[in-house]
Length: 401
Image 1 (cartoon, rainbow, N blue to C red):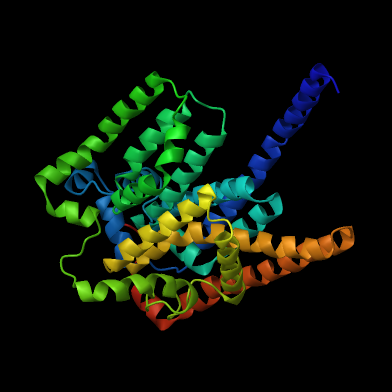
Image 2 (image 1 turned 30 degrees about the vertical axis):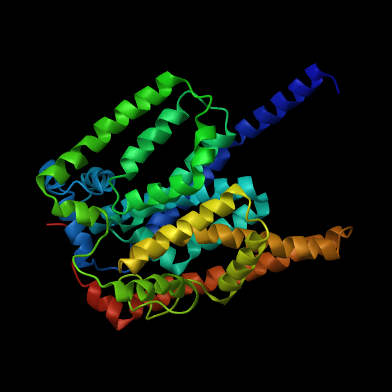
């Protein structure tokens, strides 16, 4: 095929792909609306923390008092202008959850096959704990932005946009710094990933970087001013508790992996009893993913996952196990993606030339994923709202006074 024919073929393929955008956008929109309508009503009552978030996001004067999580609060302020209900606050969290799911799909699609990306993204967005965090009307969901940032950086490294995206990455850093604990994320992230980070900006125009830095200073300025006015906000921003002992650091750090595979400390705001994040199927796929990554430690994403695991342990060692767990959620599902791919590759090695056997392997894994999703959705929609502890917490009216 000549160069001209090759270009024409690529152009036709790209045109056909673009034509599918309206249909795909409509499907995604319908799924988004359905997800918001379904999830925001569970449980029906509001929690005191959700009402407190609504108050803290009610005016710019409230933001000045405590500017941490300002991007989330601004989104809540916008949505509550249309509805004076806790459901509007929860909708802000759902939007971040949807963006995180898109970022997860994009990352998995780049690292693995389309089948793996679809299956694992479905597992993620139907997980009971993920849904509980994603519909909770508090800034806790903002830490999902750290994974969105890694997907944005992945786009920068492998994409072709060197005009807008680099400045957007720098600006995204300033926005993310409003989220408590973000300093630990960037410190460890740069320590593990500095060489790749330099490559991402190697051929970037200086004007784009300059505009990004200036925009970052403008965006991050109010938080710096708040730290100067009230130094206690700095310890809150660093997630450092008022008091903790060195003897409990190791125990607190070990609680973070326990939340995923063994048991979680009772937290009726987000969970049923002391059940872990994973069910049997996802836990098994996660362990297979760890085994697969143990053979690929030189991969960039393997280093990234090690860095994020260290970040989670650091935050968990301070005693904030919930935030540490939420930080790790999208990243551990990336590990599950490696586990799914490992199972499919082993199956294909057994039946290398039988297309029916290959299809059966995909069907078998898909069935396991569907049963796992069914269990998690039942746990979230049926079991969790009916527990007495959950009803006791979500006992406030939904209307914001």
